[in-house]
Amino acid sequence: MASDKSWKKIWDDKGLDNHDFDQSPVIVTAKEIKASCQDFTETHDKEVRILCKQDKREDRPQIFKDKGLFLLPKKNGCYYIIKGEGYVDVPDITTPIIDYHKQLDFDLESSKVGDSEMQHLDYAYANSLIRTFMGDPSLVLTIRGRKYTPQFNFKVNGFDIETESVQTEVDAGYEGRNQIVLIEAKNSSNTTEIIRQLYYPYRQWSENTTKEVVPIFFEKRTIEGEEIYYIWQYKFNDVNDYNSIQLVRSARYRIVK
Image 1 (spheres, rainbow, N blue to C red):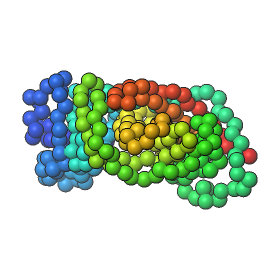
Image 2: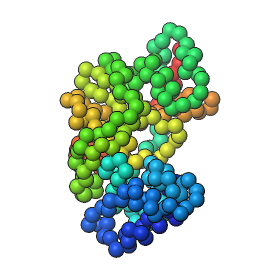
Image 3: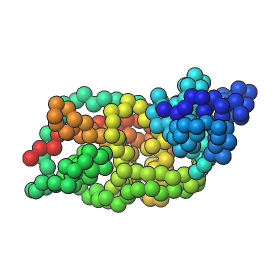
Image 4: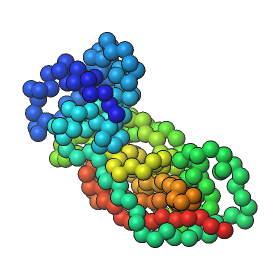
């Protein structure tokens, strides 16, 4: 969780009590954050990366919660403080668990070493679960790791926002004949996520391809000793509107022989 005292210090140094967030966002830079927090001794109270990592609603500092604010990157080292809804609810999946028969005729021993979100996603893909969920046997792994966004404009809660060269990272991206599927893998049962996690990569690849871009959350949970794979498919009804996100469908699977 972002440090309350650090953000209160940043708030006071920038005189934000005098700003009307109903009229416009405020830009804050990494340089300003460092200057405000330079006298704090704990890493979590002065490290910009930690202070600006607010991936869930509850991660925000108290002053943001009180005033209905959230952070979005404008470019690397530069952020908007914006009033409005920055997060999406990730509902629990309560439909029956679907038995999915693995497609490989041998065991993936390497997938049993460790417990990372990436290895579970790779195991699901290797057994064609992602292709099956999407109904697209043509999907192949083509995107992974960090990239930088092109310049693009969009709306957030009615505000016009411009961003460029923001570092994004997807856990996996799969391209098929007609679509690109981007996956954000979760390693815990989060009920909210910042929309940015899906929107920035979605916009990035929408700018760079003519194919439909599909954003997805993926999570492995252990239920009564069984590994269960949860998948949520989202869409943006308006490519230029950050808040136009909508849940399309979801399902959960157990992979069996």
